[in-house]
Image (cartoon, rainbow, N blue to C red; front, side, top):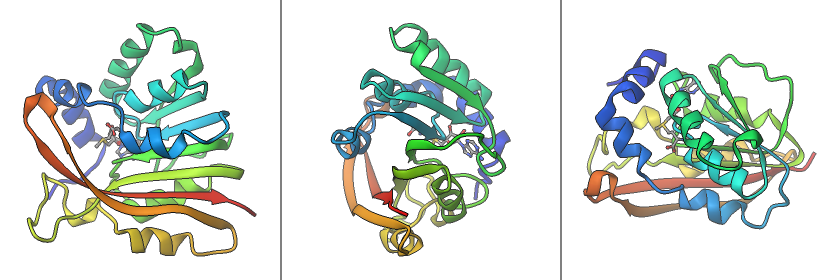
Length: 206
Ligand SMILES: C[S@@+](CC[C@H](N)C(=O)[O-])C[C@H]1O[C@@H](n2cnc3c(N)ncnc32)[C@H](O)[C@@H]1O
């Protein structure tokens, strides 16, 4: 099983086939639907990869920080943003989310499929502490496919269930506004791939 450490992600994004294939994926649909009603402000994309969602958020008016530990991914993200008129509204930060102590908190923290070495729930716990009071945390993750075992290379350690995630936020501090699972088909490189997703949107209320 893969260790999702910095070396793994640098290799991943340095591989022209993998990075081009994922680069072509459209903006994550849950980011679009789950943030559409929010008042724009500051946003962090934790594990932003090549920046599709960070870019989209900036185009909606958010002041975005795109954070990732892969220099290769951020180089692509920067180049992508440079072709748009919102590049000055995105700050790219090369950092390890499992150690980072940011000096600010954000109105919106999103994470899409970021599977880090420390595991999903510890990662979600860390990034949840970076949400301002009244702000929103949106988690989009892989759901492990028990039927098909190691689902498209996403082992159980890289996934978390709706129940496990919502249990983490079952406290007076948080209000869970959306929590569901969904299956969708994407076409990286023209090949249909089914993704089983878990989506949790929660608001810090205390
Ligand atoms: C599957 S990719 C998802 C990228 C992007 N969010 C997307 O949906 O296309 C996971 C991303 O998380 C980043 N990542 C993994 N562990 C990290 C860590 N400890 N610190 C920062 N970024 C990390 C990887 O470099 C990679 O870009």
